[in-house]
Image (cartoon, rainbow, N blue to C red):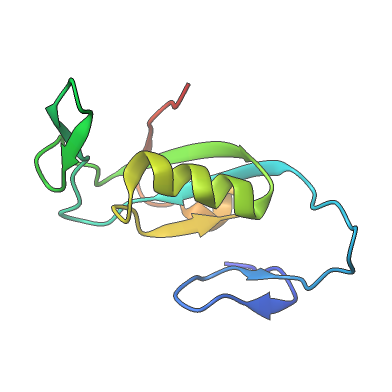
Length: 109
């Protein structure tokens, strides 16, 4: 994996550069992967939209692509999957999409 030069975030494999005030962060596709044993959050109560960790379908061998700035993509991923994901990458190669046997994309609309 080729990290982005700059300031590292704890618990995260990508380093994000420190930028001057007023600088607009670039948008790009970001790749998010899941770990073995991780499962989607299942909807427990559709009226309240409450979700319960570990009750949904398995997420291993899958990845998600979200477009936006680093921070926006990460926030969106956390809104959708909570803490149930493993890593964020800047490219498909870094994420191992082909290297690990052709991961399956989960399309988020």
